Length: 97
Image (cartoon, rainbow, N blue to C red; front, side, top):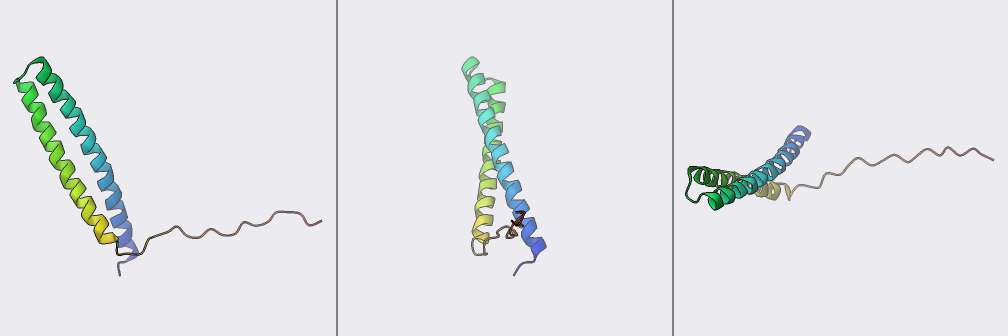
C-alpha cells in the first residue's frame, strides 16, 4: 500500500498532466491556425513551414502527455477512491423553549 505522501504526489502529478494536456492542445490549435493562415497568404513560405513544425511538436507533446495520463489513471484504478473527510454534524443553535 502506498503512503499518504506518495498518493498526494501522484494526485498532483495527474493534475499537472491534465493542465499540460490542455496547454499542448491549445498550442497545437493556435499553431495550426497560424499555419493555415500563413499557407493561405503565401503557400510554401518559411513562416508556414515553421508553423507546421510547431504544430507537429505540440501534437507530439499532446500525444505523449495523453498517453502518460492514461497510464497513470489505469495504475490508480485499482486503488480505492479517495473521498473527502466526513463532515461533522452541525451544532444545533436553537434556543430551548
